[in-house]
Image 1: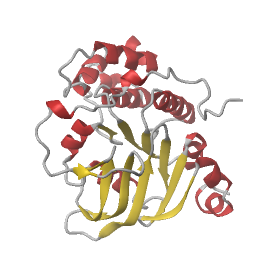
Image 2 (image 1 turned 60 degrees about the horizontal axis):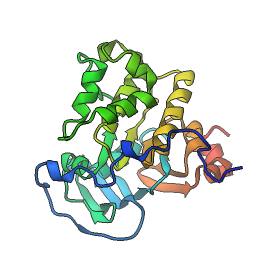
Image 3 (image 1 turned 180 degrees about the vertical axis):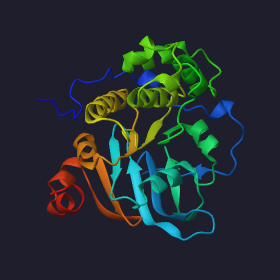
Image 4 (image 1 turned 60 degrees about the vertical axis):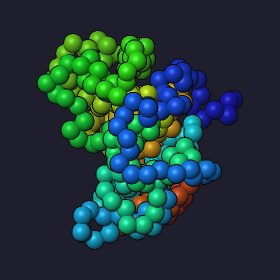
Length: 273
């Protein structure tokens, strides 16, 4: 039996990702970066953060994903899962801690400049243009590209065949699961170094959830590390290389997906026994 946690699933095609990022074709960064060699490929390290002048929501929280991994953030409602994702993506000011990507401290960069560095982010809601066709949504995802992106679009259609079938249909007419595929596909059009997904299976049926997780595994098999917030904790941990359980904005448990699934306290408190 292979040591590969993903088996033979996925096309193992690295070209849908981009080892160099897209930094050369975007405006200058909003802040400064500096070398930060070593450590995981992407890490939000010891983050303390909140919104505006409000109280801290994250408390010395660390979230990371390495090359070739799926890392999942789980926990109860109000635990700070999405806040942690937004902090890593630069959507709120951090009061302590830093974010490092591929050997570079990017804490001072705006979200759009983080996209230029190679971060793809799919928010939970408002993540597609409903009045545009599927194909127009994918084209919008390539807004930072100055090269021919048709090959990338073909790869997205290979990953999500239903999108090719419905490419001329308005995205707003699709099912919830299909809309999520559009959102992920649009993020992949940037050729990201890392893909961040906030609640990708929210509001979909169990059958659609399983299909989306299969597609997420296939995306990971292309070589793109995935950091994901997910309410369906048990199912997410089953596909995770690494898991983080947050409680009140703090790291409560950290381990491999299998370790967390087997932990009696995690099972009792967060997985229904």
